[in-house]
Length: 485
Ligand SMILES: [Zn+2]
Image 1 (cartoon, rainbow, N blue to C red):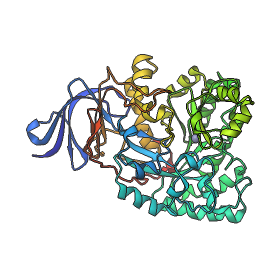
Image 2 (image 1 turned 90 degrees about the horizontal axis):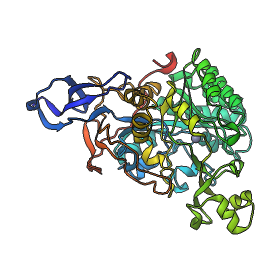
Image 3 (image 1 turned 120 degrees about the vertical axis):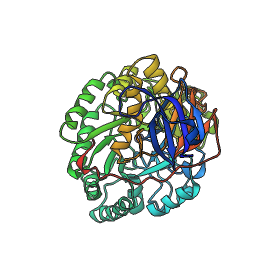
Image 4 (image 1 turned 135 degrees about the horizontal axis):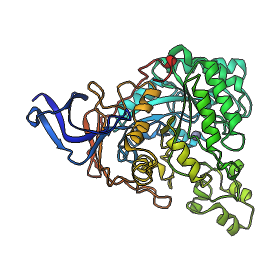
């Protein structure tokens, strides 16, 4: 018995964007040991993959699973989509390093409750994840807002030089411990008052270890081009690769501008490593933001602390029931969460199909009525967008979910099918794979995901978790100063 596992007769799509090929794949000690014709007699376990596609496990580059990987380590919403690695700490908010002295600022409440934040440094977070042993691998960014909140008495101003210095010390420590980079969430009330200079000063630290800068832009509405300029200015100053988070044209006045925005991204990418992620839906979701309240499109309330009974209702209907304006209804509901149906489908498709775009779910795991992207983003790209709408080929869809994603974050042995790479694998039926989660029934297992292996361990099969959890904490393996591949 040479191998632990052989997957027989699969259509392999390796993550590079190249077409499928038929082969057997052998796994030994959690790694891919052979690809080609392998005899079934050489393995302890044999899995017949006739008619199915075998791809690298999907890398969800945009998640808010920071605390979820510790508190719900089965990670069913993710493993059931074929996701084997999650990147946490996006949009300026991270579970570490965090020391709370007052109330939990919005939007850190998207991650969990105040009492769940107990990781004062990156090392203790890493330890807690390893202790919980989640079903998926975890890699982490450090949030700008989290750092601000550690060192500032109030968040409605820019940080002083002394405060930035304290933030730099914490960021540097986390990067040395293997954090992937820095994320910002400049549109949120807790970071919007920070100056470009503040973020530039902080981001300078990234270059010391070759780490990445990701950003939820200052605005995704009419002024998005200026916000992109700011993102490029920060990344270029820091000599760090730039990833624009959940790129979109938000707001009715902005529909149809994806061409212009992608052009700008392309131009910037000619001189500097720049890319973006995107979730495959024309609705966004976050905390309920008064700035985003409008009658231009539907806003659905997903949760409300003072009015939980309003969850699932449209803001417009609630305002009508209460006989108040939309903004007054929103004020009464806060703190609350919402889904905003505020994008045009054509823009979503253009951005998703662009060669610089990776797939990320941006799922919100603690929302009681989560946006369906939490359970459906990756199968939706494979089924709806690639197979049914033919927006791009299946190998290209998989590249956007695996190889490109792992390379951009410096995770060298993930996101690819190659001898020596980690045996993170997903087997799916290309004819039936699809998302089942909807806006009204969001917590639904995807169809057609047949089996998922994490570090060589079968973790999900026949629409159920096996109970084996083999995820690891992943630290940055590559110095990204030389840019993307
Ligand atoms: Zn965001």
